[in-house]
Length: 251
Image (cartoon, rainbow, N blue to C red; front, top):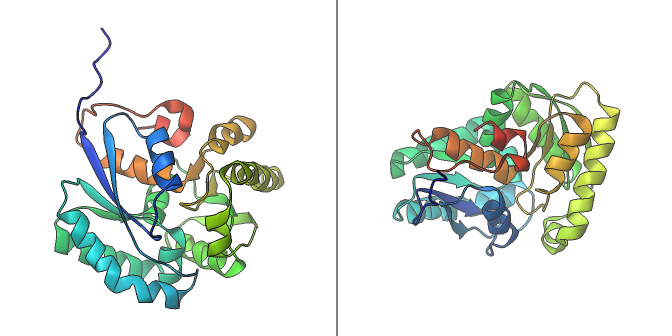
């Protein structure tokens, strides 16, 4: 007998988006998350990929965590790998610990979810493809190395935050394929590919690249969704469709 689908949300993720609008973040979540998993979003107003811009938003971030904690959410996550990257791992983990103490809820960020997912998959030497400038990629690589994960090759299309906000999904899908193929073809020793970026429409590139190169491919929304499911009580009411990649198939 086929189990009936859930009639109400059974797992709710609170998500702080670095931007004032939520569009492709939510669209991609509802494509890959299992039925009955719900996203509750609120936003910051990040102006650019810089430490100064992130620090200006920290008071708002604290308020956003409290706002989500007042909702019936099971977990809170901060989107935005550049946010965590420029803060550095020690400071980001301290902010998460403070948020968890204040809210009484598990608090995560996309980048820490990536780290947990990569370790879960046994990937310690990875390739990176991004839409960010070199300084952001450098900060990301340093953050990952502190967690024991080495970026052994990278390719990027360095664009500003405003340019990434304006990018179209079809073009971004092709960019994910182009950069992913380029870096993986040049790096046969890579154990996984990271395609970070909450605004990057890359979910459809994941199964294509995995089929072509035989390594896991991770996006922000996949890692954060996986982390929420991995921490959820068993048995799960629903599991994600494995066609969205090796990570979600491992839940």
